[in-house]
Image 1 (tube, rainbow, N blue to C red):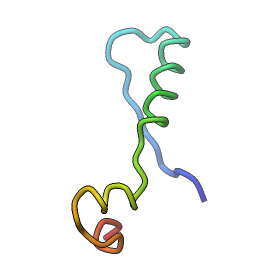
Image 2: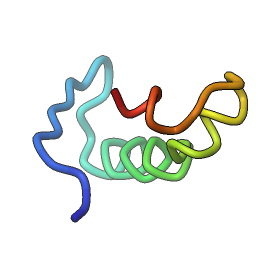
Image 3: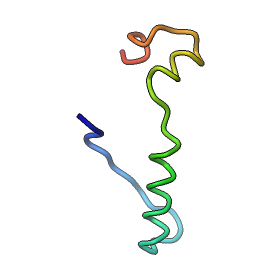
Image 4: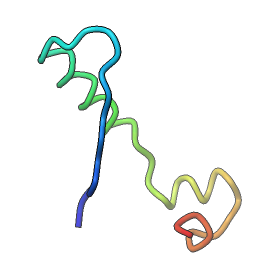
Length: 49
C-alpha cells in the first residue's frame, strides 16, 4: 500500500523547508484514479492500465 519508487528533482532552491513545502503541496494536489477516470470519461481499469 502507498506510493512506491518515488523520485524527485529540485530545481531552484534546495532549502529544506521549501523542499518539504513543495513535496506536501504535490501530494495534496494528487488525483485519485477514480477522479481521473471521471474527468476523462473512461473506466478506472483503463486508467490503471
